[in-house]
Image 1 (cartoon, rainbow, N blue to C red):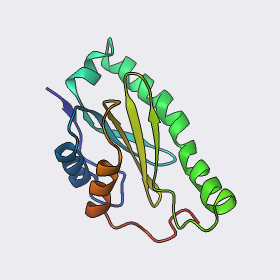
Image 2: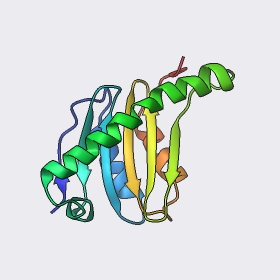
Image 3: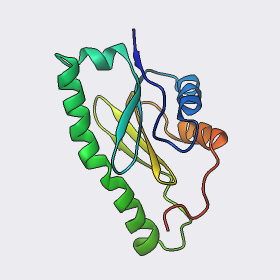
Image 4: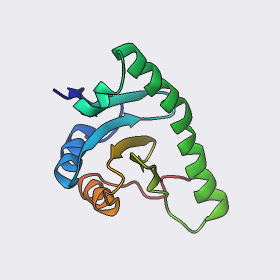
Length: 142
């Protein structure tokens, strides 16, 4: 049975966004987490994801390692928005694709969503579904 938690960090309804993402993806949703610069909270972990770890503590330790790095996304977003592309109103997402996993990090104001899916999963439909569910702040990265 997948592991689930209720949203506690996001200023928007991240639980509803998770449901919409689950309905949108054509393949497996491995993980759906909310985060900000200080905290990281898994809202959904598939059975496949949980089984990758020898224990709950090992899994949480790995997630903490991930969060230690993804919080820098907010700094990178500001770099792109304020310095490299000042005409952009916002940085909406960053995607990392590996041979076994695709990670999508979506930014809504000061909150982030960490989504992991199959490498063949198209990203744009996921982002469009999130945009249809959440009100995007104007100039969020300024």
